[in-house]
Length: 173
Image (tube, rainbow, N blue to C red; front, side, top):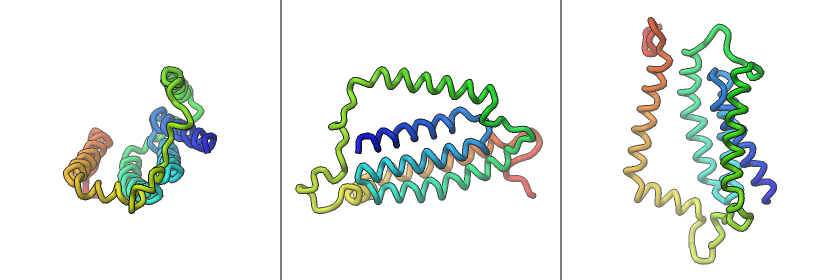
């Protein structure tokens, strides 16, 4: 289980580096899908199967629609590919940053520090992820409203960034 979690965490870092290092949104979409899928795998292996399903459906169903729309508006005639020098320079910089952060925190991570959601199931009537969803909707209602507002603000910022000089994102086609 430890090796599987380590593999999932490495794949998550590779997906996040793929998203951050590529200046073209068309190629960064693959890294975004990989990062979301591996993040769901990490949640499932930690015991949060329902939360993983909700994360996968909401993130890939909602945010990738906005991402695909903004990528279609920001189409370039000659996009940067994975093998170009600038993208590989960014990948190298991010790998060095991740390696330095891992070296800084390496001594404090142990196998025993990973606790599953249902690790203390003797003292609970519900599964851990279902109880967490109930708390999120009962006590975290204001946080859900704030998150919805932030997503709307993100949509407007992405549409403004991909507008261009003479064409607007909300133009009549």
